[in-house]
Image (tube, rainbow over all chains, first blue to last red; front, top):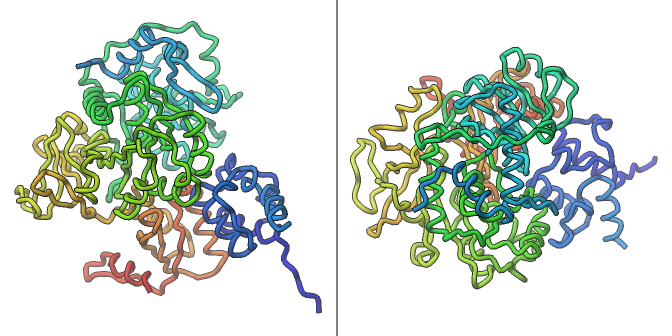
Amino acid sequence: MNDVITSNEQLLREFILENYLFTDDQSKLNNTDSFLDTGILDSMGILELIYFLEEELSTKTESAEMLPANLDSINNLLAFIERKAA
Amino acid sequence: MNKKTLIEQFCYLSDTNPDAIALQQDTTLVSYAELSHKVSQVSALFNTLGLLAGDRIALAIDNSIDYVTAFYAAWKIGAVVVALNPQAKIYEIEKMLFQCQASCFIADKLDQSYITQLAQKKIRLISLSNSKHEDVTNWHQAFDLQGDSRYFQTGKSRLAQIIYTSGTTGNPKGVSLTHGNLLSNVRDIISYLKLSANDSVLNVLPFHYCYGNSVLHTHLYVGAKVILAGSMAYPQQVVNSLRSLRATGFSGVASTYSLLLSHSDWSKSPPALRYLTQAGGPMGKELTLKLVASSHEATQLFVMYGQTEATARITWLPPSMLNTKLGSAGIALKNIQLEVRNKKNVRVASYQKGEVYIKGPNVMQGYWKNSTATKEVVIDGWLKTGDLGFLDDDGYLFLQGRNSDMIKVGAHRINPLELEEIINKIDFVHESAVIGIDDPLLGQSLCAFIVGEESKANLFAIKKHCNHYFPTHKIPKDIQWLSRLPKTASGKIKRYQLNRQKEF
């Protein structure tokens, strides 16, 4: 029996799709979409996102790291998580 | 004392202080003269569209140089500004456009789906994003025009703004403010904050609410600078900007400061600000003390209270009294009379709890075309605020909640009935009740109790449905399923019971 390992990408996409786009439909979110520009996340949303990163993806975001470059899209988040894990 | 209305003062400053910077957005600086020129070009555009003094010009524009330009251009022709939430969906926007019979609607972008029906109502449409639609005028055309330097002579009794605000019954109501209302409140605020042309405020507050509105106009009135900083999504960036741009002031609501303290290096190296202001709901003693303790020694915190129906500001707490009167909303502004009255409309003694009533030049004219609702809150010139509290012997006000079912999430007033009406349209929902539950950051957050078929798909459907009609802050965070709603004998929903249910 194969264990299904859910990747960081899948977990992040599911988190955003379910909580901010209210859908399971994967086509509604591109990994390059800017959360700020598209209005998907507001300041509360960003806070919920960093709690999610800490709880589910073992990545703690320091205050100084709360920047769009690290958090503003799925791709930015994946790169950030990888850098922190290294 | 300067008695010029806000638009008169703006025109005056662009002649006397032309090079002083009025606005900054990212690296773009706009001087008073440059802003005045843009304003005169947009007012020329308004003239070509046949807009007249007294017309309602509605805006749904994010905080920006364009927003301020549109605003003052409307005043230049003597029109009434109706600034709407740029995140609002057409469902809400239409209601307000039609209620105030707007002659013009200016938006960051206009969707094809509703352009025709708005144009049919003879509403001139202006889009900030280029549109090829024949019924839409492109904003950028204004800047090819010669500026029109004339301006409509605005008396203090002329209507300046309508600000829509939620109540506990019915649709949002249009708080109507004259130039006199704005001028009196602006002058009082300038006086206690000691604002001058040397100040620059970094703004994160939405301009379409009364707090952000007053931050904008007070600073422009003294020839100061307004730095347009976007939102609090990235608190560290905001703090970095406060330092690098050498702002002298910052304004926030309670959650703004909570975010600053918990998600930035503010405490390690607080920016050397002259003033911080806080309004939009109570901040709580602990957070207030923490903010003061972690701020720069030269920074003074001004705690304030008010509401849209009072233009903006009703009371302020002098920083020197912050510790002695911790938890107080402060003393009434210079020209405002404040009383606490019981349910029989009789003034009560100090330390007796009752409802706050105020009288002064800042009290609104009324709700636009809604004399029934107006008569309920403006009585013999006194404004019944709906806020409960008491005065101490020194005249300091201590607030203790509100007189209604209205919910406050962050700084947003939300009428639960509006949400329920929309949720109840969903086919699998039999009934719903929306309440506010305590939230450590926002004061309250929204919880919807649904009598209907429970499923994950249905949960998504409810949120998506709300998302179609309302901006993000009005979408219930929490959805609970019930077999029935608790009600009184007369069929009224027992909201307090739902609240207690949520605690478990």
